[in-house]
Image 1 (tube, helix red, strand yellow):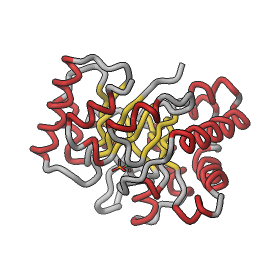
Image 2: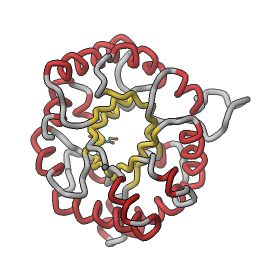
Image 3: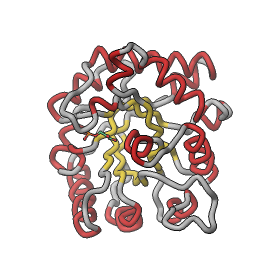
Length: 251
Ligand code: 13P
């Protein structure tokens, strides 16, 4: 059975102290209000081990926002999947559109990162999504299909079964412009069909597909109500515990 998940992506926000405070606030809220979904906090690398310690609520997982495409060695400034794992984190966000756009991450690089994440027993939260021009040219289906094919379809069905997908239309990220529930359902259903064509209905049915892009307490319920939307990857609204909880409470 696929899991409903609400994952926060803090991006490059919060000092260590601020991050630990936020993680503790989310933890306290969820201890008092048991959620009906899995909750993940995606923190900067330096927060990971402290965030792991700050949450004692068994519904909260901790995610890195990236990992290296190399195992170890002379790669100054990089953080390996094994290092992420050693902090106690359980997830890693891969292929976020900001990493693709600003740091040149290609599907080929993301294939390596996915393999290393899985080899280190981390759950990849793998991001896909089109830019505005691609949506306007009606190319969004082809774009997400290629992203999935090139970065993930080398995986065995068993390995693919450990991956969480996050559809994030780039035009909706941080813009206040959300995909409509109909747009989200349409492309999530397409993504699930793409998985079914490759891996069969069971793997496709068991894959969690999250929506991301200006998701907030006021629109989460109608987005998550769609049969193929299994939760959200939340940027701005994950930086305030109350707002984040408002989204979690949509389940
Ligand atoms: P916003 O929720 O701020 O639009 O960001 C979405 C996102 O990029 C999550 O990864």
